[in-house]
Length: 222
Image (cartoon, rainbow, N blue to C red; front, side, top):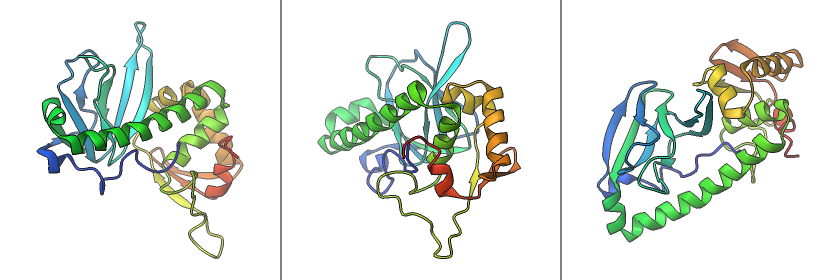
């Protein structure tokens, strides 16, 4: 995972293709798994999670979206997961029929889906091979813009200050469901990172990364 959206807003705008802007409150369901797939969505502001529910009620968060990301493209007539906002969100919605009529929009979607496939491949590696510490470190690095991926810009300051403030829009349970861990394991890893001086927990929803590069080295990708 890298600290960049799958599609950047400067290159993707459903409004240019007749999209409609819709405002959603925090933890509003945009569509449910099994609903008829009639629209595509572009996240303009806020954060959205996509998840699937198992028959016994367990949940797997499959993707966490940020501004510029496109979602809602299904392989059948029904959505294969549920989309729920994590914050107040502004979303551009466009009818699938409009996609069929626009070659330019189809090219945009092809580019975005190619990038999305790369992100999902990385998440498959996280779930299948990474340790609990590597998973939590990867998740936190995913939230740091322009760090941790190809072309990482490194520390912003010449004096070596490599701190970064993170605002978390997910609960510990939601993070656990995304990383394929228990909430107890997530809490234990966070406490360990805090004890080792890698992070500082200011509030339940706010974490300060003391050394971004040190955290990045714990992702298992170095």
